[in-house]
Length: 98
Image (tube, rainbow, N blue to C red; front, top):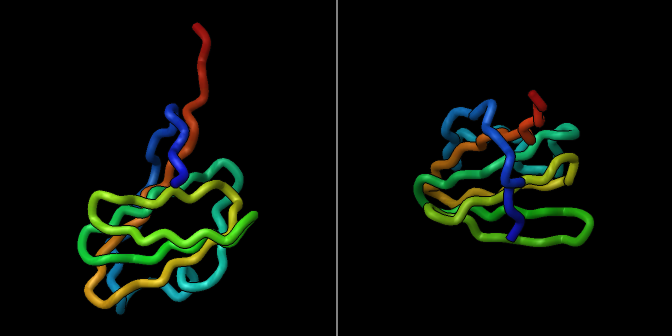
């Protein structure tokens, strides 16, 4: 499973989505902008996270097992009934030399 860069910091978080409120854009291939990482956090139930490139990978997420979205990589999610989740966006912290 992918991991967030060690120097990444969260900067934005979505609302909590359910199987009935997940935006349709998340259900089909989409990607984040350059430099934008994502962390899919499941609060209840399960969610299938599909990474669509460069090689298709399918991961079942659940509470305690989050998914990492790499910048610009196409992906989609498949919710199960009863799932509750959100996406937290991260960016790599820039080094500032004194």
